[in-house]
Image 1: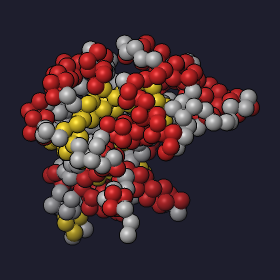
Image 2 (image 1 turned 60 degrees about the vertical axis):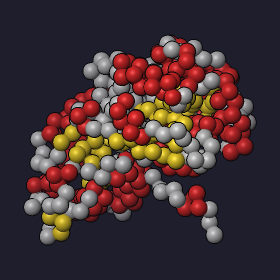
Image 3 (image 1 turned 45 degrees about the horizontal axis):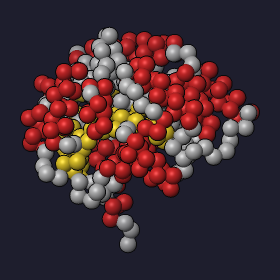
Image 4 (image 1 turned 90 degrees about the vertical axis):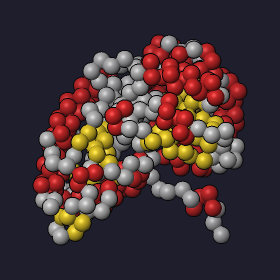
Length: 396
């Protein structure tokens, strides 16, 4: 008999879609994928060169389990410089990607039966990571009119005496929406009042458009900082998804537990990747501006095209590199004589018939939505949207 906990966990739908698209491409099929949650740019040259130098200089042995002191100090400098947050190396745990940092955080704070409030739509892994740490994910329904951002009335409906933590993701995946300072202050006060930990996933914080100011909830006061576990990494901002370096900043007590868990689960993060991450954080930052400029152009084009398509509507994303699309009006219609039943069916039919891969909203807790990534070339985006529009015009 296999473990009930393991059997209860669903595979990541974003990785499943990406895998299907890549498998079709390997067979020579002309597939356009909007599924990828990673930049299409190469890792900047100075970061690659730092990794090569690290290999040649012999940085190939174990490091401390929670990361090198040099990288932790660089993370502290980054948080002070960009977020107005003062942490020490003892507050930092470097892990094998931000997903691993989230896993460590839930493992450190949750006891069996503890509840974690997860605003909908959510990144697909949040509920599964909570379950893996014996917690209970509680979906917090949000509304499109509030830009899918959670409000106090939403929290009150989901809160119980077993509530242990709230997950915040800003800019959000899949919506690309950003919480304002004022919104975070209101939510933070509620969490302080009810002694609720805040797990803030800030992996997309450098990918923000239109000059929108970014605020980390941990920067809003010492009391809030002590309740907050800040998750970030280098994957999205520096096009380093495959390098697998994420980090958490938390109170020393939480960081100590997270580090102890990691020491037994995985030992240290990759030593070479840590040296590359150090170069990313302390090195030239022009590469971020170049990527952001390209993402901004693609975002504008994709959003405008979607707004002009039948049966679809979307909010303009403020950050990250996704557009979350409401497809409710398309569901129940027929294509080729067959009814399009739900978002899973919509995505499957689109991939099968038009060779376009999107991520259905069911994985995000929103069965009437789908996520499109614009972390792809403009040529691919144009071609993929042409195919999507043709599919929609064929619906009856």
